[in-house]
Image (cartoon, rainbow, N blue to C red; front, top):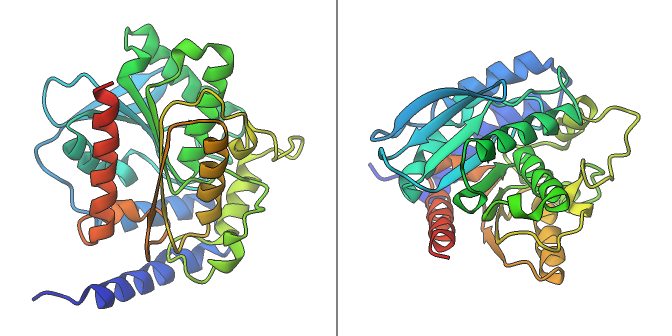
Length: 304
């Protein structure tokens, strides 16, 4: 039986608001959050026809997902979760879909979460993984750096750091999905979309910031809030955002600033979609289109 798309979206949003967004408004222990999100993401079907390999890179647990034995391009993905949740398990099915769509290998990592590890240690750990990939002979031109939510924050912060230290090590492209880029929380969409975003609450963001940013640091520095960084010299970038997201303005502000800096930026807005909607591609055409847009972007980079 075919379900009406509007009814399907209403039911899904209601479930997400009840099972995740509403509980996230309360100051629950991060361990409880981690269990909840791992249970939630278990409903996402695991695609077949991909190969998995468990790795340890620079002391960090990692997983390689391959759609076929021989692939040259790598998507290095940094998962989201407000700096305090997320794992290889939560993103495995979603990233398997990306591997199949792009026919590229995807590498994702279990980077240290907050509050156990905080800024700058989290970013340093990801930086060490990237440098290890280069040390192993992988060329920057063969790496596309990707991240969702706070993972997009960490991805952009990493590129800004690489650009400053050695521009030759900057990856070929950058994918920012539902990016959380301003930890000072000045984006207007945090207010006008707070009742519309089915997955993410302002309270969850505030808790994540409290865990991630030590009080001695100013949250407005580009290393923490990369929206305030210098975008000149960034690689081609794809930005994806849903119209109902509380982080809508983070993405829009990035696009405007990137264009001013002459960055080759592709901005995609998906009507009616909530935070991290791309993970729901088995059920929603907008999410399927987002994965198709990622594949198109990645293939264009592969041809340059």
